[in-house]
Length: 191
Image (cartoon, rainbow, N blue to C red):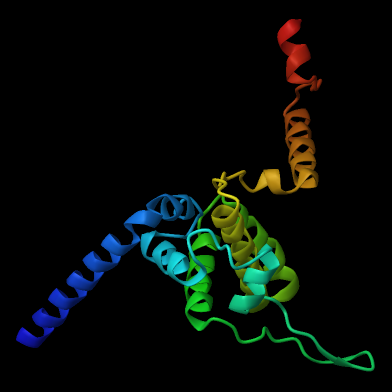
C-alpha cells in the first residue's frame, strides 16, 4: 500500500510539473479543448508532440501523414494489395484514436453525424480512421492558423439533409391537416 501511495504521489508531481511547463501554451490547449472529445490531457499531449503552432507542418495533410492517419495505397497494375494506414507517431495516433471515439459519442456533433453516415458504408474501423484524419486536420487548423473550433451541428454538415428534414416536417404538418406555406424569415417579419 505504501508503494502504491508513493506511485500516486509521484504521478501527481509529474502532472504538476507538466502543467507548469505547458503554461506558456495554455491558450493553444484551451482552443484544442473546444473540439468535441478532446480534454486537457489529450490537448497537452498533442501540443507536446506537434508543437504549440504546428509550425513544422506546412499543411494539415502533412500533420495527418506524419501521425499516420492517411490511408495507405499499395497498388500494382491496378490491383490493390494493401490499404492500411502507414505507421506514424504512435503517441499521437493513440491519443487521436481515443479522441475520435469520444467525439463520435458526443450527440449532436458533426463527428457523430459523420461517423454514423460513414459506418454504414465502410464499417466502424475505417469510419473511425476517417474521423481521426478529420480531427487531425482540424487540430492543425486550430494550432497553425490560431482559429477557434465552432460546432455547427449535424444538419449544417449537409445541406441536402437540411432540405430532407424540412420536407419531412412539411409532410408531417400536412398529414395533421395544416396548410403549409414556406417563406424566408426576412419576408415573414416584414409582412
